[in-house]
Image (cartoon, rainbow, N blue to C red; front, side, top):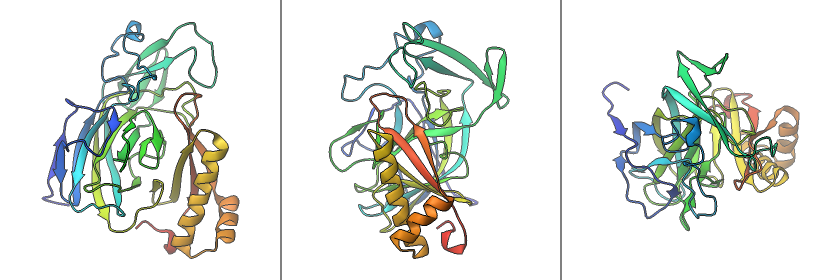
Length: 307
């Protein structure tokens, strides 16, 4: 919208937890655009591959120093029971990212005796993976609103959002997060220049970025779990310790969402998901982080169009 203020928030201060007691770094109106600068998963400290051990987070800590988030942003008028709708308008990547393989992290174990990192330049929309080149596919790994109770580390995902590592959180997607505390207290971080579904070694191309977002409050629209939409898809996210648990939650939530949007009975919605829906794995890298999944269902008619 012409004349609308574009709020700015830099990455000079980041956090490793989502916490309702955090003082906001930025306060914006109930419909605002923000440009937020984010760090990579190791807070900009892994500049040489040989520094991989020196910059490693300790998952024995309550809030491991990984996936730093920028924020929180307080959104005026947001109250518990509302939904915070976040439109991803742009993602501008830093000049290099990294990937890491660890002996005890990822779907395949013990390929290496100690962590091995690869630094990859990013230029002109292409990632240089040694002699190989492949196009960037930018996405945002971490989006969250503050939980009402105990703080949660930025490494973890759940009903608040968090480290969802959902490939659909990219330019053109609207993310819906439940508001649990006054002002919502929104955080963002953990951008990837590219990440395959599953993030099977535990990292995509981890990279710092500047993300352009629009934040809007939808009164009384909170759902239990985050969900997303594009012009073509409804997308339900969920996470749990196992794939079976996470996918059951996601499908149950999608059944409810289709009931709201199309007026379908639960059995009919279940059949529709089975007929045209896809269950996809966001992250499943055998780590301390829960398995994260999404269910995607095409929008069939006006009853499923974006809100």
